[in-house]
Image (cartoon, rainbow, N blue to C red):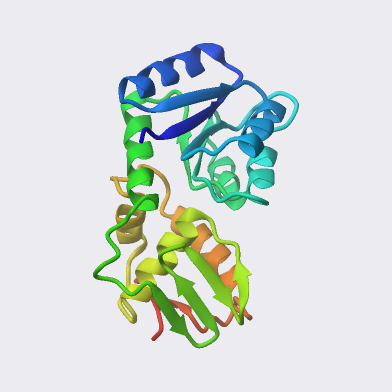
Length: 228
């Protein structure tokens, strides 16, 4: 089955170019030109990935992203014309999985999409445990759900990918650079603080005391690891 992509941007020439290129790769592309239209489409349809512009009419891209995260974990890539690091990090704070700064090369866009697709549509679970239970946490790798003391925790796609990787390799320390390459699936061009943001958000969701974690630990000057 072809992958369904929603492209949200008020610049129609950009949308047209992205749509043409993705359709050439066999993807099914739908478009929205403001925040309200984007939310309506996401509530009514199922998509494999969303390309979401930061600056949108009616409702901003960040608010759209935040509202989508209240009911869906569909991968979201923010498109932004701004180059400030805070804008990029803020996009990730609101639940985005990645960002691309305009102007961009369409080949980069397609590479990002394919990398995310590989991460979120993995089916090769045969060599890995499908259900993992550690202390108060239960991880269902098949359904990609996490429970703490029986209560489901709502993780983004990237947060789950990070947790799953660390849990399957307990006590192994991963540098931020390595996590970028493994989880994001390509030679990431962004700031390594992207990893710090995701780790912090992950801890806020799974740790009873994020400042004194019992699951995801920091090896100062090296990286992160899951304590078995």
